[in-house]
Image 1: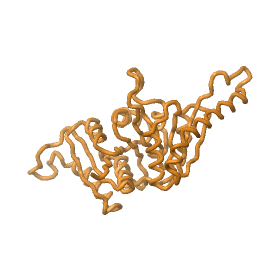
Image 2 (image 1 turned 30 degrees about the vertical axis):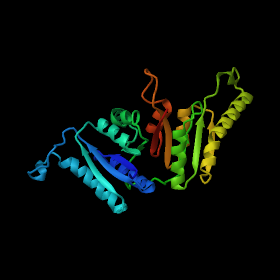
Image 3 (image 1 turned 180 degrees about the horizontal axis):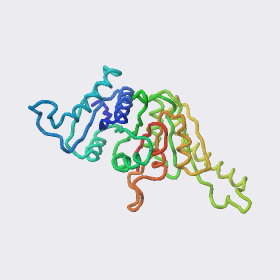
Image 4 (image 1 turned 45 degrees about the horizontal axis):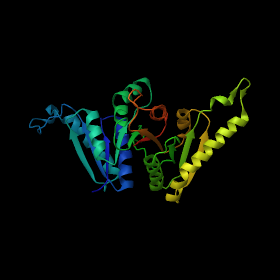
Amino acid sequence: MNPLVTVGLDGTPESLSAAHWAAQEARVRHATLRLLHAWVLLAAEPATHPSEADQNYWAERIVEEARSAVEKRYPDLPIYEDLVAEDPVTALLAAAGESDMLVLGSRDMAPMASYFLGDVGLHVVARAEAPSVLVRAREDSAPLADDGDVVVALGLRRPSDALFEFAFDSAARRGVTLRAVHGRSLPAPVYTRGGIDPSLSEAAAKDARRELTDALRPWREKYPDVRTVDSVWLESPARAVVRGASGAGLLVVGRRKNRPALSPRVGHVLSAAVHHAPCPVAVVPHE
């Protein structure tokens, strides 16, 4: 069975950009592209009256316009349309379980966009079983998958094979550099009455660089053709990941599947990435 890349459509410019990005990704992965639109009021039977009175008219138009736009760029890409009579979050989560990747549009991070992500996008990426990619609109409506390096945000307490695999594989498919970014807040003893103790600060940085090198070593051996650059910043991981994403074509971040019951749906690093990173953000679930 061919790999499957699913893109969720809602008729916005962001979802059209997501469709173009998903099409490029499907082409790179030799996958089928599924154009999914979910609407709870979708009629089960085809309309027998004029199109302007068809209850499904706008739902069908959203998918058809996305298909037409994608086929102009990728005429040989296998595509199928999927109209689902369900709540969007429910439908997208089900689709993620059937797909190798789920792609969604993401609005600019104004206050309304934060509401949007909390209402739909974060509900999905916080629970999706497959890697989920959030894509913002561009003027040409086509954010390409190979624009810039792949950046992966790495925490080193519990290194994740799924996160490393996705990041290295993405860089290999695109033929670009993989930039590994690790942010680490300085430990309390570094701070003195006179400011930051430079020797203790350098020791903390040295430890972090060694741990990052050790974590990357087996993956560099597995993907010898992928050029990697690693960076350690002694600041909050959330701030480091946003800074590291500058100029990237894709930012890859992890999400623990089983978070503590009273913790937020997503961690600080993931929240910073999806709200502030200037490029598409891939969220990879892992144990």
